Length: 342
Ligand code: ADE
Ligand code: ZN
Image (cartoon, rainbow, N blue to C red; front, side):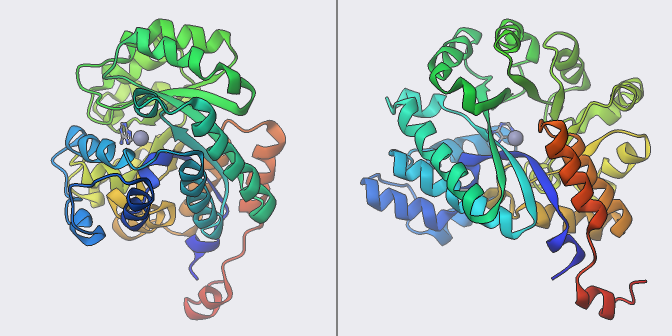
């Protein structure tokens, strides 16, 4: 057990469909009679080198075809939450994108019923505090995103917020201005993928045109020093995903990953997994990659964990519980002994 393994943390940027492990994909494919274009889980894993976001999204969308029934959505969410609870995740704000499934006429009641049951059971079993953020896919029209808001209305009380995902280039946040206005009017918390492959201007649009509270990725912010100052001054959280950025060729080398500079500039940066099996690691692997490549020490890792609660959409008491848990966190015994921790 390392310091990171037991560090209490929140995960704020993970796509539920992107937590589908290859073995589980094959199991669900067999259960549902869905054909897959790979011979085995190993053959699928061998495909996990991507030229960029759209290459990844093609494979990810193919994988989504095995998710058909309420039980499938339950099993997927249950596996992610169980694993995350074991990684010290106290709170998980999980993205879910219903449009792929609505295309296949899978009712929202099947989709949300399964995910929400898993969230409730995981809370009872492990104490993990799970919540859902609904993603609209930006390669589709804004009208489709507005239809999605209608489609998920029966679950309004169980949906924490909405965001925008999928292919970023050529699909700026401003394309979804009315979607975000409508979502705000319904009381949803607002977040948006921006500056993953897109330019810093997409981050500005997300804030200025769409009025979002949080930026998913925000990697491109460092190209615009005034924007960095603004993010820091306004306390806008960035949900960064280092292993995702590496696998999707957003960054070529984690030893120059901008998270350390953003932290020093006072930006509320957080560490997350995005689509863990596809990118080679869950949330603790992402913390560990930064520890290794950026030389972060325990104080910085704990600061990132504090940020994860401070940047969450939890209510004041949930945030305070998380912050207190980080502050009370003791390094595990073997770290104390082995590494001469004082
Ligand atoms: N959907 C799943 N993963 C994504 C990512 N990294 N960027 C945008 N949309 C996504
Ligand atoms: Zn994402």
